[in-house]
Image (cartoon, rainbow, N blue to C red; front, top):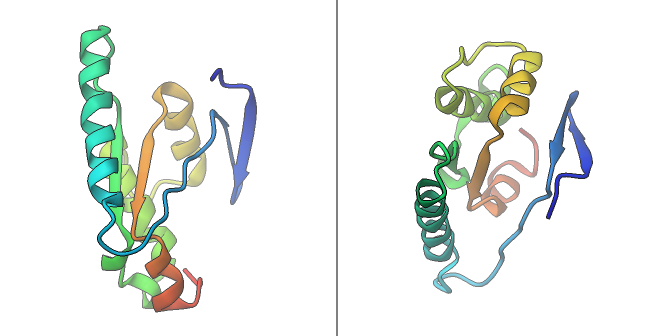
Length: 122
């Protein structure tokens, strides 16, 4: 699918081909399926002569940062910043500029835990 629309979230507007949400009961292989897709995407990029795709995988079940300044969102931005090789305290505009350069595949595993543990409040 070609990139044809923009997505805006908390002031970040970037071209986006969309997103995929995978759901299912415990033990049905969601995490394994995503890990397999991640591996195949990396192999495909290498075969086609592309730079390795920038991938950031965050397990939301381990996010315990709701009590820190900026909460879970700040914690996520720091993890994304490490992949982008920018300062985790950078303004959102810096993230947006990096996304425009090369994009990023963001994998949020166990995202339902965000709502279970924190009532959806980051």
